[in-house]
Amino acid sequence: MATLPSAWSITIFLWYRKSLRLGANPNPDTGLSIFLAFTFLIFGVDHYFGAMLFQLVFDVMTCFLVADIARRSFSERAARTAFVLAPSVRF
Image (tube, rainbow, N blue to C red):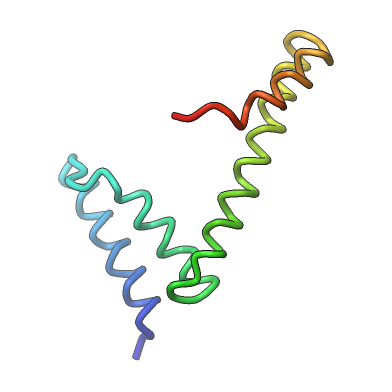
């Protein structure tokens, strides 16, 4: 018998696959649900530290990516500026 976190993540995955097949996404937060199911599967249920840690690593890697693109396109100074300013952008 499956444990609660794995059953929950499988249910969310099947629901998401069904919604993609229908051509519509009825829940705009489906990506968040899948992300939390994935992190709960790895770190355990209700351990939000894992989600925060994953988000922190992803954000820092995004800053490095933006700085690398700025360095290749413009200069070292632009790369340093982009690296410092990238965390302040909110979508």
